[in-house]
Image (tube, rainbow, N blue to C red):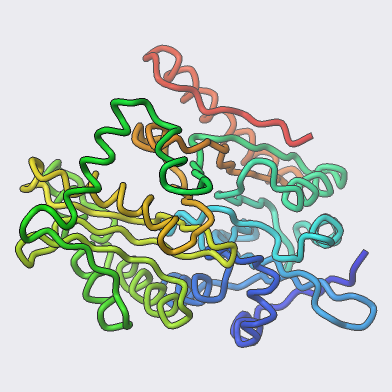
Amino acid sequence: MYHVERTSDLSSLLAQADLWNDLACGIPFRETSWIAAWWRQFGQGQEAYILVARDQDNAVRGILPLYVRNQSGSSRTLAMIGDSIAYSDYVSVLARPDDGVEVAKSFGQFLANHIGSNDGWDMIDIDGVVEGDQPMTALMRELRDGGSMVHAHSRMNTWFRPREANWDDHLKRFSKTQRRKMRRWSEKVGTVAGLEKHLPESIDEALSSLDALIDLHQRRWNSVGEAGSYASAAFREFIVDCTTDFCSRGRLHLPTLTFQGRPVSSELHFVGGNRRLYCYSSGYDIQQTELEPGRILTVETLHDLYRLDFDGIDYLRGDEPYKKRMSAAPTRVLRVLATAPSLLPRLRHAAWWTGFEMKQWMRRRTGRKLVEVVDLA
């Protein structure tokens, strides 16, 4: 086991970017670029609750970046930095793969011993854990063994499509009809007059492409009466900060399709240290449906797996039909909750569980898909 200390000094840890990002194992939503941008926009007035695991030589072996999300009276709920509106996926204990489980167990024991005190917690609520994450499973088991109630459920999946040996092998995974469509969409770039694809080569170009994406995204959702993700000024600034930082690190892929000089489709991908594209946001021109710019750029991005030597594409959370059509494989995204073994937290959990079961009953009555309860044993 490792020695665990708690700190609220997030900035000092983020300043050690090489150390932090090494422990993040190349997942963009765990890295300093993402965490620091989120904290700047959404961390004001919040209390950071960071656990740091050190070995006998005092070297940092793991980090658990939590914060106190709700504090009413003596009640304290811990959540992962990067949650809520950002919809961060693949959140986890930050540790190298060879000792992630041991680090997680140390964090679990620390949390089990700091319940209900002034610097402790009553509930832990972490969204964006991917099923099969061994360190997070180990953390929750330690809490359960310490007397806490642990619950996990899933509303949707992440979807990952690995690359094949080459583009022709990639196409073989699809039906003959789908292959024909994908070839037709891909051939439009370079054959349709005025249709061009652009990849930014500087931060200024990246931010210009991002502005185009945001405009396309907002117009699409506003047209169906929805506010759109970028209606929040804080969220927009958060994405601008992330785009700037990832671009400066050479970890951004932001293709934009233009037609007669005007953007008609754009996709925002963060590039993992594992050379995986994480498809975070997109937009297309709803006035150009006959051109099919969204489909063209989707296929162009798949083609880029081979042109630019990416390992695959992760479409992240959400069960939109196109992800299955792209032959991506699903993995459940979990929300995990732990409730401290004391009266008031148990009463809060009982109230939450009653509401959860009522919603499940309504889903059964209306034929909607049930939220899946997941066993972490």
